[in-house]
Image (cartoon, rainbow, N blue to C red; front, side):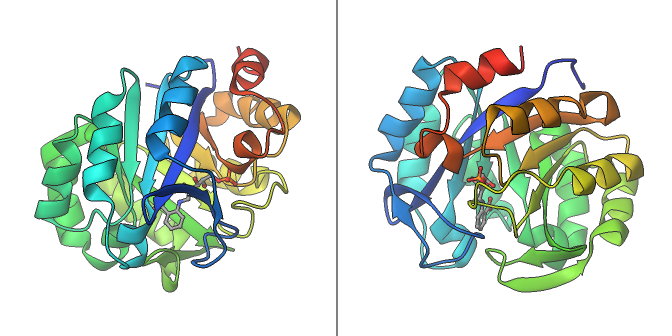
Length: 242
Ligand SMILES: O=C(O)c1ccccc1NCC(=O)[C@H](O)[C@H](O)COP(=O)(O)O
């Protein structure tokens, strides 16, 4: 259900066992921020209600951090959204077995639509779909391959009962250039399902601007780089959207 207050989801993206930030989601653009569990616990201590936890190696197909991701998810008292490389029954079962509140499917929604329709029917709002776009073209396989038109896919997923979308403008992700508010507005105009905004948040004003879209259907915002770069604290962010 969409609430009036914007939910904040601090991000922990894991590559080769480390919490990292990427620029435009590109493999090789990593800045490392140390132990993922320490980062996740820090966001929890700061008052986060959600953690956005990404296995980047699984997303890129360069291995996985499944064991470590499960340890982080299990150590959290807060809700966890898990993303990265969840593409079949085995990876979905492993993800759900961590006790996470929901998972984000990305590539699978583009390449395995029948399987995605099946797991949406089985798991309801435990399944969200990540709509990761350049312009209005979706990208899969760790954002490296084109995967069709945003709005056609959105209409298909809506008709299959998808509960929620995580919308990322790849051109903004990890850049601190501000969110793509127009994209968020356009997606909200095409679906009545809640939307989680991702990518580009740089300031408290960006968060306030996203919060201004709550009446249009934006439910939450993922924040990565800005927190790691100390543009503001999570406590300040939570206060800004309270
Ligand atoms: O989420 C994924 O599956 C993923 C796959 C490949 C590259 C990046 C991926 N996620 C990145 C994120 O979810 C970021 O943490 C999030 O967009 C935050 O962005 P920012 O605030 O701009 O650092």
